Amino acid sequence: MEEKNTIYLNCVYQNIRTAVQSIEDIITKVEDVALKEELALEEDTYLAFQRECEVYAKSEKLDIKDNNFMEKARLWGSINMSTLMDKSARHIAEVMLLGTFMGVLTCYKDQNDHGGENKEIDELLERLKEFERKNIERLLPFLKEN
Image (cartoon, rainbow, N blue to C red):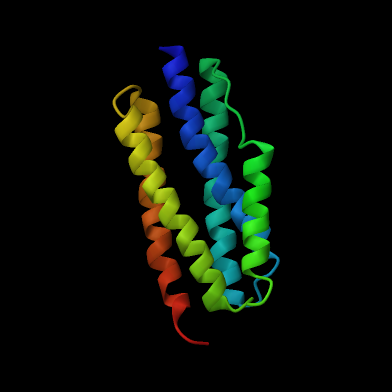
């Protein structure tokens, strides 16, 4: 059971870490004050989710791991290439929306693959999924023409 919980929690943790890294990589390129504030608020909440995973892992003696170097490098490169020519709020919102959609899809996949194995992780995943769905709603208005 411990191994299943470790795998499940790692799935959730790595989803969160991907979001945190994405925001960290892109927020320095954001010039629009409102978008920068939105991303900072999202980052704060993702970091709270991250801490919650870490505390839970420690209390249950589970070994969670961050994304591997290749995944981090791929994400960093993708964001930097995508924003090289277009740093508009609209484009950055689009990039973040695509990542957030992927985060929601990952939540659904993790729920289907591991849901029901651990009530605490199920609840954490459900809250993460709901948070990401709300992020989509808050980012959509930034798609309007500047």
